[in-house]
Length: 284
Image 1 (tube, rainbow, N blue to C red):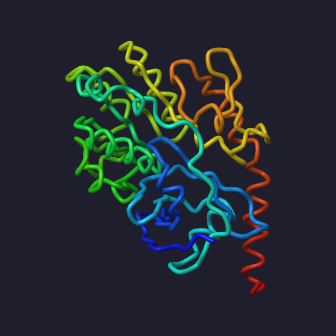
Image 2 (cartoon, rainbow, N blue to C red):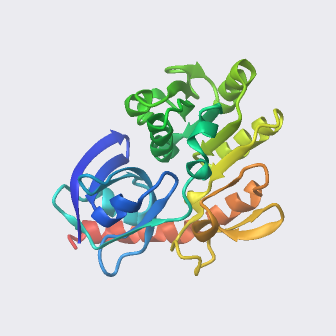
């Protein structure tokens, strides 16, 4: 069993939890994810690792309460335990394998949207610890939905964008990305967030011939490659996000297909939410 050590509300319906999982913490690297289950009958929930500490054996995850299972997870409190916490899974970020001396010569731009800000943090933190300070755009619809701004500011140069202009740049992250690319020039862009955001970030960076990586973790369901729900076309070939990714060349990803795949289970998800609400209303 994996106890919840800490829990805090980051924004509306978005929670951070620190889980005691020593073996995962000892092996985790930026870009990887875990699969959790609330109990022995629960569905498998893939979540990107947002931080890890081998010294105290803890792993940080960030959850948005959207579906029935994530709502149940967000309702759990410190001291309660998860049934399983499997990981680290997936391939770590490509730059982790690069020589540090080479990385220190590179300029890296991260574009983070919404909950996607959480998995950007361990990447920016790892780079900072190895002498590389990246630029990070954090985007949200409004100021109240921004997360990890303080944490990120300690390890990177942070630029804020809000759709409504309540703070930072007034507009989409792509507009701010254009300004920074033209001003600074970059060697690599990493985009993590809603699928539609990553699509338009990729279209933007293509204009500048800027190599771009997208993390497609939002496609995953069972995390083993067996269910096939996370199939994605990259460069005309079929890959499984959970075992081949979760990071891919954003300029080669068929985002339109990926977004269609994301919508395949909405009916089932809504039904599960309604059934869960009935159980709560009935005191079950």
